[in-house]
Each structure stands twice: as C-alpha cells, then as structure tokens.
Length: 490
Image 1 (spheres, rainbow, N blue to C red):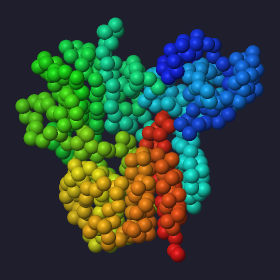
Image 2 (image 1 turned 45 degrees about the horizontal axis):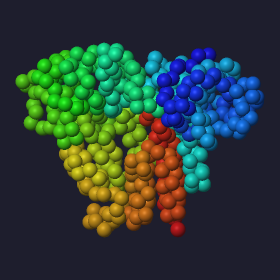
Image 3 (image 1 turned 30 degrees about the vertical axis):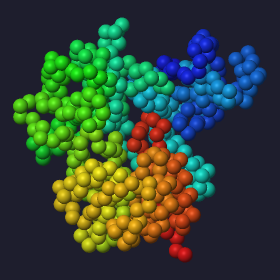
Image 4 (image 1 turned 90 degrees about the vertical axis):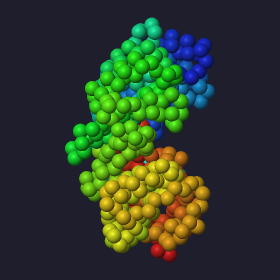
C-alpha cells in the first residue's frame, strides 16, 4: 500500500541530511501512537541487523508519520538524534490498520496544513479523547464522572481563518500560495486545499495565476484570510470573504487594478498591508464602496440563540463555524443556567459565549465578559446591542493579574466560563476561588494546560463532572476540549 510522498525538511546538519537522503528505507512495526498522532516504533522490535536495525540502536524510538498502530511499514528516516529518530512511512507492507483512509487531498504528505488525512475521522476524534484522558490522569490523577460524546461538525472545507504564505519561484515562473511543507520553511506547491473553506480552497490556482501576473509578484509575502457567512437578510453589498495582502514594497497602480478586478469578480474584501497591523488598508473595489471605517464587516450566526455576530478580518474567531455552533450550545447546557443567575465569561472575545449565556439567564440575570483586548471588548458590547441584549457588561482587563478587587468582580458569580489561549489559565487559577462560582466550564485548545489547570481546580474544592473533545481541527493533531467542574460542598 503506497503512502503519499513527503518533502519533509529535517533539522540535522547538511552532512546528516545527505546521509539520510541516500539511506534505504527500514522496516518497522508500529506499536502505538504519540500524542500528535505519529506512529511509535522501536529499533530491534522483531527485526535484525539485516533489516537495517543496527544493534547499537536497539531500543531507540522512531516517530513515524503516516503510520497507524499494528502496521508494518517501510520507513524513510528523515531525522536522527541521540535519543530518538523521525521518519515517514512510504509503504505499508503488512497488516494495514482497518481505520486507514484514502487522503481526500492530493497534496497530503507534502503540505504541513494537516497530518492525519490517512486516518478515518471517527478514529481521529476517538484518539484525541484518549489523549485528553491520558493528560488528565497523568497530570491531575482524575477522570471525569461523565465522558461527553465528541462534538463533530464539518470535516472538510471547514477552515474560515488562515494565513497562507506566498512566494514567486523564478525558475518555475509561477507563484506558490499555501501552507508550508511539513517541518520546513519551504512553501508546499499547492493547487487546491480541501481543509480551507471552498471559497478559498479551490481558488488557490487562480490566486497563483493572479500573483504571477503582478509586477511586484516577488514582493507579495502572505495572504491572511477571514470568512464569514453569507446572510440573506443583509444587502447585496455583504462581502463574506476578506483577504489581507501583505506586500514588502509599494504596489503599482496597475497591480492594484489587477487585484481589484479579481476581488470584485468574486465579491471579496481587499486589504493591503505594507508593514505592521496598523498599516492594513481596505481598498475600494467600486465607487460605491463605503470606506468610512478601516475594516469591512463579516458575520456568523448562532441560530440556536437567535444571534448574529459582526466581526472584522483581524478578529479572533473560531475556524470551524459548524463546530462552534455545537460548542456554544454544549457549554451553555453544561452550565445549566437558571433565570436570574450571574455569570462570568473570561477571555470573552467577541461575546461568542457571553451572548448565548445572556439569553439563558434572562433580563433578571447578568453576564460579565472580560477580555484582554480593548478593541474586542468594544465589539462584544456592540454585538450585544445589535442583538437587543442589555444584561451584559464587558471589560478590558489583563487576566494574568488578580482582578477580583474590581467593582464588577466582587459581587460573586453563580457560574463561570473560561476559554483561554493555548497557554491556559494558570495565573487565573490562583485567584479564581474568589469568584465563588458553583459551576465552571473550561473550553481548551491545549489538553496539557487544561490538565494542569484541572489539578489546580481539584485542589480548590471542585470536582470534574464532565469532559470531552471537539473536532474543531479535523485531520490535524490539534485537540480542542471542554470540561465542566462543580464545587464540592464542604
């Protein structure tokens, strides 16, 4: 069984790279998977010197991309270090795993945008739940009272936010647009992407052609894209796709005209960025375009709560809108809110959780959203007003510091929701007991920091009642999870 080829660039010295490049593939049997979804094999495990398993390497671990448990495979070693090696399975020679799948994308194996397309999606998400379970047991010595069913949404064409590299290759007389190759700074040569929203994923070839025709084609460095939903109730001027073109030198009028024509034909928003984020400039495509604000608006909805969110291309939003809808409902259900309760939402962003929570506690209840970015705090308040919600308050606050002395914080809360960045919420764990919340829902994009923070919550008198994973980033090793905690009566 053939495995997609890889152009992975390893990190050892040039001499070692040349030696590895010329070396023959070595047979291995995969025992298990690492936390990032790579196969784990051991030198000497059933193989001898004649198979390339030198005796001095017996017992050494090899991490094998594209391999699944139980499979025997030929492995091309790509990186060799003192304590471990890395390689790519180039062919399954025996015992193919029954969960092996045909990758939907022709660029899988070269592109670094995802690494698990060779595995059935259901098996991927079950594996991620096992990773979460192992982290919780290893770091906090706990498992939840109840495991939640995995949250599953769109598994192809789901990604609505991304940064794509751009590079013009003189020898090939074409531009490259897309993600980088695995473990490399080189751009993968893509024609399409099955993970990106189709509005962009199947326009990559056209974007390459466009950039190749520009005079400044070798000065375009990056495309940052953001997409929202097309809302029928909004006027025809709604442009649900926005691209920010990062250029290293000023563009000529002719180049700008070509970009404008391309974007206008697709009803996309066009932005140019010459330096930092404060240099981003929206470009009018027609005389009717309203450029009174720096950014045009994008939208997404949470129909369960009759909510429409407005955001701009540089805002943080969840990349998988179908999973986001289920995630917000699950978080609300787990908090089990009652009318009149007071809720705190930390890292509240645009109000993605705050506004549904406000619907549930009703006019007699209240929701306080706290976010580090002042601009995001303002947009959350704007979204509340646009949706007719008046029982919310939003504050900008550095959440790495104790804020329990603030007027909004010292009245106590019935429930708390926290959705921190990958680094988790360790600083918050130190002062969180002062909020005295009976119930906590923690949404995590890193199971390691969730497990670490879980240990802190257990020590502070909470019990882990529910936990589960969400398929926010299907076909990647990224694990998104959710956990519910309940205060234990003393």
